[in-house]
Length: 376
Image (cartoon, rainbow, N blue to C red; front, side, top):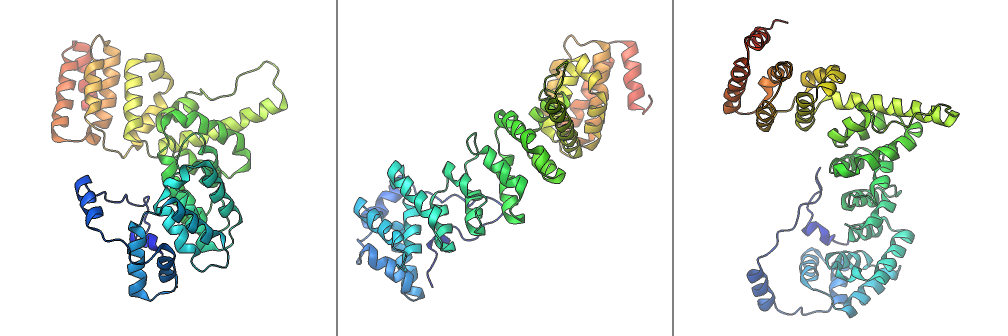
């Protein structure tokens, strides 16, 4: 049985990406290199021991292979082993290549590895080759690979960005099983907000070919603030035309369908980030507050997040030059959130703000008093 030397680094994959290796300090690393004896056996002998030796000798060979940095000639020897389909040492050869990936900086070497993965028939070797490619955009080609191990490694190693976004969305919308879908969900949740519009454009293009549950799940992972702007405010809505074609009508219907799912997703468990954004917009913009009053009320009632004290600083800043009507609205929102604001000092800050606003005028004082008493 061939020992998987990756296990020495990646004990057991959990819900997160593999943990980062602990780096030695430069001094410690230098001392290690100075004091480390040269391997007594060559590269191919170590591979043979790893592939065919007993447990103790396998472990010793694995330790040496991990610290042995192959020369250019050594890289070629390892590649030759991988390309010999009859060689029993192919798996450890790929694993060694994966520990020392600087050789992949060469375009020709990268193309060489892509040929391997596209024709590889051994599931274990294919999975190891995918691990070797971690951090490379090409992994998007492997997210729907029939070998589950390959697809999982591709999901773990995929960089999330503009060039890989559509493949990531495709894989999640199609579905590869709970484990891989969980990994892909975590990757999508790390998407930068600047790419939300691009993700939405793609989702709208494929919305009629996937299930509502899949759409709802994907929409829930996208950054909430741009999602609100694109769907609740309607910034992604197709342009209106006086003479719509059948295609225009179909696109508009599809947009309304996705917008409804997006709105439901945003309201199901509004994040603290979204709440802060909505409170700031509502406090500063009377038109926004009127137009989205019902959404705002539902969001404030549904959020389970603990709201940071930064929101109080926002309201303090917005107090300057605010009208009585705006202060009343701010007081109403603040009281709806008062039990969800973190920290004991924050609760004192809430009381101070309300008292400050009440001192603005007798009429406002009465309105805020009624709010505090639960009166309309």
